[in-house]
Every structure is written in structure tokens, then in C-alpha cells.
Image 1: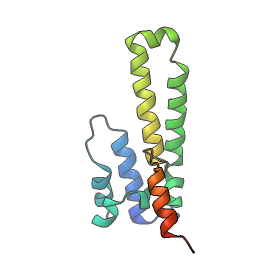
Image 2: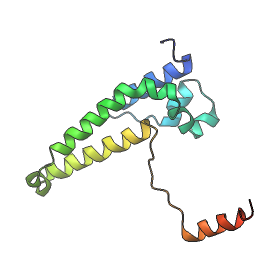
Image 3: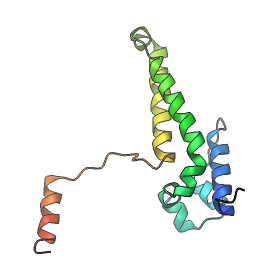
Amino acid sequence: MDKEHTIKQAKFIKLLLENLGTKGSSKSLGEIILEAGYSEAMAKNPYQILESKTIQKGLKPFIDKLDERRKSALNHITDKKLKASAGRDLAYIMDTLTKNHQLIGGGATERIGITKEDKEAIDRAFKGF
């Protein structure tokens, strides 16, 4: 453990990287959080851990590697490969790497929008503030 991470943080980073690097691993993010010693509440809201600056710093080398691999996959998708199954395989790889990069990097993993009706309701609720 380095001096920047708590015991739980160091264990979480180690377990997460081992899990991601193991073919066929089936541990969920919540299970990894619990195994690292965090509470059930933290396991149900992993973003509190993943968005931590200390955790992000510890995961940065891996995130950078994911980004490098994602870019490499994108560069290898040619028109010819897109017409063949290898193109679909590369697209799948790129998609998976992008989602992992976003999840581990603390980025958005889903598109969340606000409807016009929701905005109007919010505007009404805060009218006068």
C-alpha cells in the first residue's frame, strides 16, 4: 500500500484490477467493494468510491491503458473489416473498452436526459427563489 491510499482503497484498487484482468471473472463491483472492506451502503453506490480523487489516481495507469487499447481498436476498424465479422468483433471490443473506461474513470455510463415536462415542473417548484 502506498502512503496516498487507505488500506480499503488499496485493496479495492488491487481487487478491481485483478477482476478486470481475469478472463471469466464474475465478481460484481459491489462484491469487490464488500471484499475490500467497505459497507453495504457503499457497495450499493459505487460511484462514491470510483469518483474519489485518490481512487482515480490509483486507477489512472489502467484507465490510460484502456484508452490506448480503445483507440487502437478504433484505428483497426477498416471499411473492409466492417463488412466482415472481424469488424463487428472490433466494434464490440471498442464498445466494451469504452464502457469500462467510463465506469472506472468516473464518467457517465448512461445517457440521462430531462424532459420538457420535468424541466417545467422543476421551474415551477423553484419559482420565486
